[in-house]
Length: 197
Image (tube, rainbow, N blue to C red; front, side, top):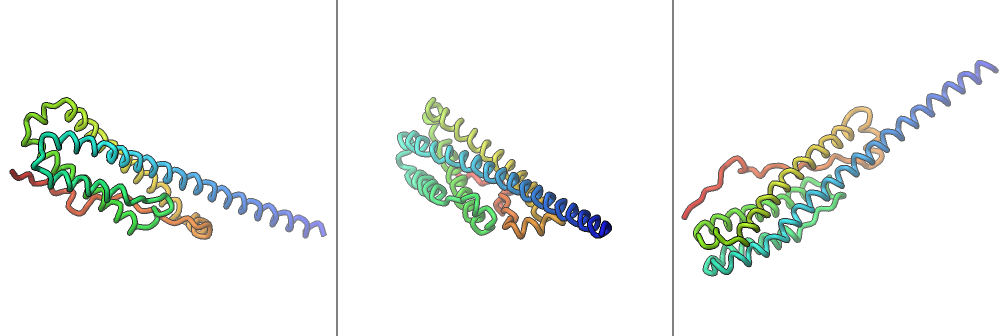
């Protein structure tokens, strides 16, 4: 009788330990998932900052480069496209959604690069204080976007390692935690842009 109670107590303690361990893993995953969502919000915040600056940049350039309407329209169209694609924290586990989001943002970056090359043709515009201030803001925003994407990838890496390592992967899978998608460089990112006049 006494041996049976001891065995039962040992089993109860072992089960309790496993439950506490499982709860600890789930709580850790919740925290990491929230870190990913918070960092994603920072990435979107910087993209929004860029989208808000672009109309001011376009209007400033329009005054000087009215006949370069094609480039300006391309920037406006790319901004509208990039702003229309929203990627929620829940969709971060969908690589296809992340690819579409990145394509839209990369198209906007390319259009902005072409706009800044066009501006080189207008010495008066380059000297305009409003343009210089906007260009500085835009360059700073691009750097912030790059930093936030890097931080996002770091947080996603930590999360993905936890979700995919043994034995946490079993608890993560049963609790609905899936790996998140990374930001990736565009295929021709290593190729420098060509500037032609």
